[in-house]
Image: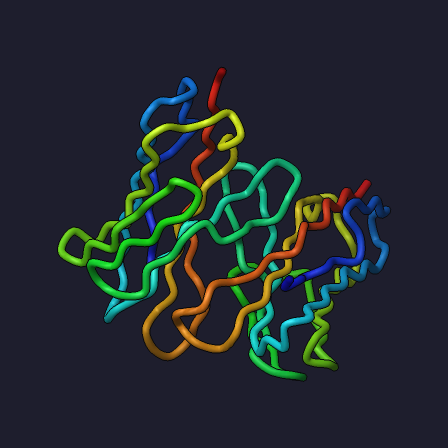
Length: 113
Length: 113
């Protein structure tokens, strides 16, 4: 079956530091890949997505590239802010049959001033 | 602006009570989902529905049931609440298809005493 593995947190950074959150996946075919963000006390919201190999998703300074050869979709940001403190979830949806998403366990990011 | 709303943000119930959690989406989405979120366990799928009156069990359906009488509304029912059902409950919806993201509600934090 499908699976998503993302690095455990918490990840603790100082403001303006570079961020990488690793995400690797296992799936058959050509899944779509997603990053969601959950701010404290809220539901998840889409941060970015990529639907085919070599696509780069980007939003709010965050980027992730769909790498089929390494089955990865790592999240990066060049300069984090305190307001980026949240939990980040990597997810995939399969390319056929059931479209139930598979989520990683989430990575907590804490950014200090 | 797309919206998924949940009937309560916070709910406190007693052991043995029947509990209804309601979710409404205004985007005409085919798919709707109920998850629970617990620290260290990420998101776990309880039930999903791909059409009116259609439902499928997720990973942890025991102790829960669902109802989807109208396309926009998906209800989660705890037949006899227990303390181990204390959790954050998240509803989501999405169009049918692998490339589409999910839209989440703000969550209901349920405490069973």
